[in-house]
Amino acid sequence: MLTELTVSEAKTWGDKVFAGVLVADDWASLFNRYLSDHDFAANTRRAVANDLRKFALWFTSINGEALTLARITARDVSDFKEHLRRDMAQAVATVNRGLVSLRRFLGWLTDLGIITTNPAKKVKELRHQRLAPKGLDRATVRRLLRELELRADTRGHAIFSLLLYTGCRVGDVVELELADVDLGRRRVTFKHGKGGKERTVPLPTPARQSLEAYLGTRPPVPSPKLFWGQRGPLTTRGIRSLCAKYGKLLGVHLHPHAFRHTMANKFLQDTSNDLVSLAQILGHESLQTTRRYAHRSEQQLADVAEKLNY
Image 1 (cartoon, rainbow, N blue to C red):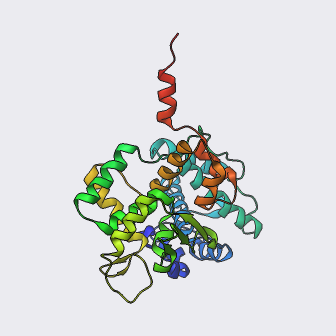
Image 2 (cartoon, rainbow, N blue to C red; image 1 turned 30 degrees about the vertical axis):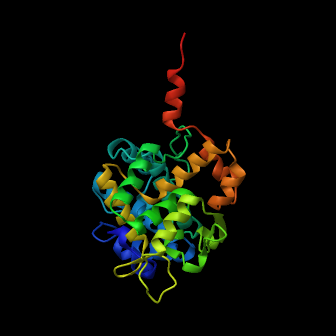
Image 3 (cartoon, rainbow, N blue to C red; image 1 turned 90 degrees about the vertical axis):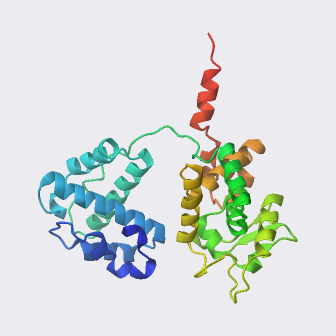
C-alpha cells in the first residue's frame, strides 16, 4: 500500500502509515509533522514510512502492548534490528536503513522535547563487506536486448538503452523531453536529476540508434515528453512494469536501478577505473559516492580466489 503513495498525499501519510496499528501516542500527526520539517524526496518518504510502520507492527506484536513513545527502549531497537536481519532475512543495507530511519525520527522527537532520550542513539548499524553494487551480467543484458529486438519493442529498447548506456535514474527517463535529446551532437541532457541538478552526458552509438528507431514510431502527441504510453506520458510505475514484464520473460529480477549499477561497473572495467568521468556522468557530487563501484563484486572476488594454488 505504502509504495503507491504520492507527494500530493503527504498530509495524510500518517493516517495511512499507522492505519490498523495499535498506537497510544498520536503517531500519525507526529509523523506528518516530521515529514513537513524535512525536505525528503518522494522515494525517501516512502522508505521512511515503510521502516516506521514495520517497527510499529513489530513492537505491538512482540511486546503485546500499544506503541508508546516513552516505552521504546534501546533493547526494543536492538531486537528490531535483529528481527529484520534474522527473521525477515533482509539485506544488511535494508536493515541499516530501517535503523537509521527510526534513529532519526526518535532523534527529532528528542530535539523537540517530546521524549527525553533517543533509545536508538547507541544501537550500532550492521557491518558488511563493501562490494561493488550488483548489476546485470553480460549474458542477461544480451538476452534482454535480443528479446526487445524479437518483439520489435522500439520504445522498450530505447528506454533500456538509455538506462544501460547513460546510467541515468528512472526519474531522469520519465522527465525527459524531446528537446533534451540531441542526436546530432550525440548527447542527452537530464534537467531534473536528483537534488534538482542538471547534467549533460554523451550518447553512445547503440543508444542513439535505439532512440532514432523509437522517434520514428513515437505517436504524434501534443506533448514535449519523450516517452509516451497508452494513457499519457510514461511514469516511473510504467518503467517498473516494463522491467517486471521483461524480467518475467527472462526469469530474472529486473529493477531500474540495476541498470545504473550495470553501466557503472562496465564503465570502470572499460576505462581502467576512470572515477572522475563516471562521477560526472552519474551526477555524483563526491567521488566517495562513485568509489563504491571500484570495489570488486562477489563474482570477481570468487574468480580471483579460485586462482589460488598452494
